[in-house]
Length: 568
Ligand code: PRX
Image (cartoon, rainbow, N blue to C red; front, side):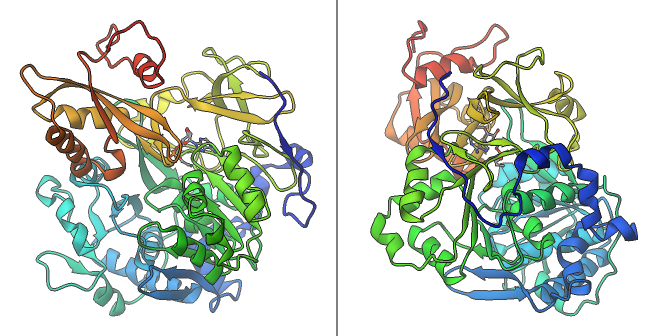
């Protein structure tokens, strides 16, 4: 592997992290705990550290916690308001009998109520189950059913995607929007407004905080269990990677249906007393630039696909906005390409700092830092205290330049602690001891910078969203025209990858545009729009392994146009 990566020199400045090597030698996660109030009081709950503490101990009650806009409305909430409303919502939940350990679904578009609901759930000690707003009935049913959720918070428009009859454990449905009376739903606002406050429920640091479903290569999505103690990792990465300071305005563009939108979308900045910007509605390059300018965003965490979409608006687009406060830009979820980095340098006068992590890791793991050089194409260096390595299939560390499994020495504060209802699946991550095997391929250069080389297991990453091929295949195979389906990621200029489906039709079925649309729709309406294949190709037979599973290696070769020797 060549080492001639283009280098962008570290910038001088007052960064929170100034000496990476020293930090690696000295950081002990236990010492970060001293920064939390529970370290001295023994009373722990992330809702207290993220919201209440800012009001009660830091005199920040009147400071803005949330700037929300969706084009139509523009609302701001102070920390005191978030505290008050989440205290009351927690009491409403308690009145419904919801207690510590119960699971509560959050199925909402980006809105202030979404954030308040999360904090309210945490205050009762219950466990939030985030559901991405685009999930359709089947995906919602799987997640609410598997987690055994007793309540869900939603809007009337999404109610029809919650199959109550199939979810006997689901007792309470809250709707946050104003709506005519609906049978059997509880109206969030009137209940919250008339409620008293609930004293916060203290929890153990190992108690679950949220269960996030993430797609894998086989089987259904896995419910990754994240615990309150993860906040130790949130805080120190917020300080050293995101370089957050008290005067910052922070915008993480990820939806809280995904890990980034939860951990960095609000928990991390709020723990640090930093206000967050939330933009509702659909993506629009102009709206996003206006959001950066209008709120004076100073730290921006986004993804390559979003950067590329703004790039496609042309140089003129950015010139219309005053982005003078923007001082630190970070990226996650997909490879950060040279054109995006160069675009940022040319148009935003600064580089973009790539970060690598996963739903499973719960916090930034391998990152670029303001005090270090950026090497083009590199996801950066392990966060201090994190033992990352490239290992072979037996767990031996490979020398620099060799591609292998990107692995992390098990045991860090924000690591998912289990897979809900499936401990065996959890154990699979650790089958090569002492490593957590990420499923990503990577190599490290001789100076210790890591380079992402793709997934090893067939999980598709389309515009930063994770799609499990198995779920899409199963959905396609439900259609009577499809005998067998094989789904794979196809490289794409804009989205990184798109979902491509190969299908073998049942005998006698004639392929048509109409059938193509039907199949796309089956996935769109059954799972989620982002999982629907953008390309469907009919083949004589789907390649199978000896065990009768879809042979993803052949599919990958097909999609890359390589000569597989296996006819389509
Ligand atoms: O393949 C890696 C890719 O996203 C996967 C994790 O997806 P998810 O759990 O949805 O979490 C997304 C963000 C926390 C990884 O296994 N990925 C993540 N960061 C990067 C990346 N690929 C390339 N570059 C990155 N910086």
